[in-house]
Length: 169
Image 1: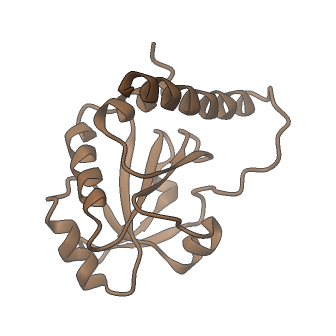
Image 2 (image 1 turned 180 degrees about the horizontal axis):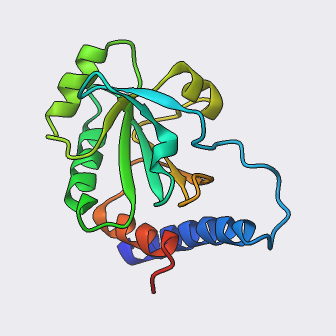
């Protein structure tokens, strides 16, 4: 069953990544992409910095949303931590909710090695409803939206995703 799920997931991701690559090369005349990184700035929950998401253009980005008290979100942060050094992708977590203090405390439990940011109202208006957490938006190396995934992605799925987004075989 796990093999079937991994196969279906890889087809879903490869299809989305292939569509983005074909569009980037001018091969598909598609509707405009609504989610783009340009012009989105988020406050860090680890420092006083403001982070411009446009700075992540150059490598594929997984922007995952989390809430305090979400155990699957903690697992997602830990999976990102394990892959962060060896992956060709970038990982960022964005907290949603009213309390920055609770978002910081909850994220610290996972000992993040990736940026932990606060989702801005502008970003939330742009993406619409976050149906459940973790909720991940996937962007190609040019900062263009590829696809979204609701729920936890284990390391195997993340490695498949990395290969499809970076055109590895």
